[in-house]
Image (cartoon, rainbow, N blue to C red):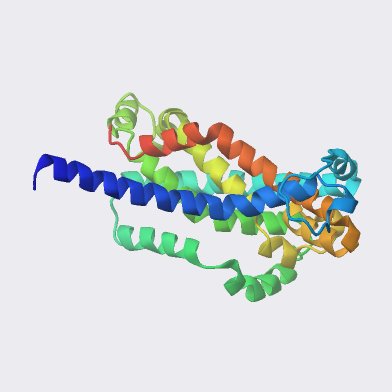
Length: 283
């Protein structure tokens, strides 16, 4: 095949690829754009017969009303608290596990790695009934401690896989040199490997915190007290306590719920992608 034919084939492939990307982008952005449109409408414009994306009289009063609600701010704080607990606890558990999988060769190492990845694919709905009874016997229902422990357990598999890939890119000779100078294996891990893996740790922490922020099933089943509910469940209850005429406030609350995760990812996407790609390159 001639060079011009190869170039045309590549261009055709690029056109198909980017067209698919554009279709996926539109599929996800149109509902979000409509949600934002509803959040800046007055109650009178919610049920207008004319379909238009931008309202005639946009207002930010809806945002002031929602942010002025103490209950909504409590939901935001609880959601952030549980997301940080889940990502932080997963970091503590997954860091030594990822180091062991990266540095040591032991029987069943590969099946264990695949098993960890398999656990990540299991829906929380599958285990919620026995988990509920287990938490009930431990007296951990309706508490951030109990829900946070489940957040950690769910985040550990993904955190372990992400961090292992990053640690594979750090030369083993660095901690070996530290051990030659008298350091223990654990000391080399704390003083050499963890500081060098800080970008990977941060990227994994951010992604798992975003996943924890959007977690719904676990807090919905394990938490009952309104003052302990995170934003993912709080917005659901917020909908149930509002009248139909308050659709604009519900849309506003939904936008404020999505905004932190989207903003964090957009601001730190280069850092996250760079950290993940760094883990794919062996030193």
